[in-house]
Amino acid sequence: MSIDTNPDNYQGLRPVQLRADGRALLLLDQRLLPAEEVWLELDALEDIAVAIETLTVRGAPAIGCAAAIGLYVVSLGLPESRGEFLTALRAASERLANTRPTAVNLFVALQQQRVAVTDQLARDPDTNVARLREILRATAEQHVRDDLRACLELGAHGAAKLPAGGILTHCNTGALATAGHGTALGVIRSAWASGTKLHVFVDETRPLLQGSRLTAWELMHDQIPCSLICDNMAGAMLARGEIQAAIVGADRITRNGDAANKIGTYTVAVLCKHHGVPFYVAAPVTTIDFSLSSGDQIPIEERDGAEVREHGGVLRAPATVAVRNPAFDVTPAELITGIITERGVFTPSELALTSSR
Ligand code: MRU
Image 1 (cartoon, rainbow, N blue to C red):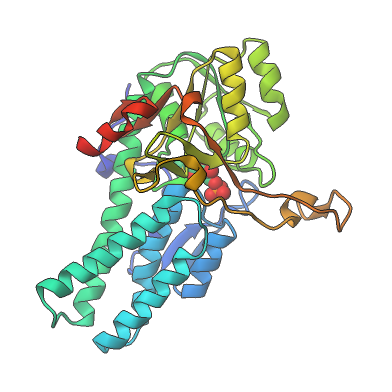
Image 2 (image 1 turned 120 degrees about the horizontal axis):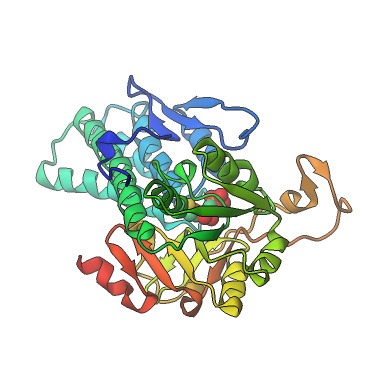
């Protein structure tokens, strides 16, 4: 049975929500999973910004959703005078934009909010603050709904491509990383639901273990067969013929089809090329940045070295050893078999077609 692509009928996990009274951002704390399921209720700008920086909420589309809802929630506490409100709103938006540089969805969400407010003021310069807040709320809710719909639809497109057998994935691209359902993991979910016999190999995804902590948790919840592997085992699994395809998400895809994703994705793509195994990238169209011509223009976040020196808060290296900790790498278009979006599946060279559908 295939998955219903109508977001209104979606029953799965929504990790980023507006609280029912409309006054706080609800986040499932992803730092604590899978040990604890704790929901946070945030309404202060700094708390929301820090939640994004610390990966309390993470995954490109989910960060965009958190920023969109977060900006609305923060607007509730801003001054009632329109001039002061707009100045403070701009500052809040800038603070959120400065949290993480790589995932373009964050900037898309904030830009949608900015355009919604400026369009309204262009139509009616006397619009009061209460009405501007309503517009921020409606825009945020639409952003979240659009992301969920995109994930459900790209899941259906990708499911038609995914072969049966071993499927390798990297990082977490599930419901947790989006408004719901997921991108690469959404494709896996949709393929499994439509009867494709899969066994998912889950890269643990050092240093922050999004694969072992989050992807394995989501797959087990859905009873989709999976095996957790250390990142350095993927090559051996491919050499043994245990993997028929790899599928990952993306944080930003450039015009030429290069794709930034969690560090280690490039390694997987090179391995797939060597072994003649298809390598798919699944992402909503909001992840494509047509303003950049190639992947070398994507800003790559460099995170604290403690994330590499330590593991679970325990020091695993000399305390002062120098560390490199880029959070993302760029997979060049020539290693990508297909980019799966809500508008269909495209080769990297066909990517421009996504904007005309
Ligand atoms: O640092 P993270 O956990 O936010 O990185 C997330 C990823 O790299 C995901 O693969 C990507 O955002 C796609 S999520 C649908």
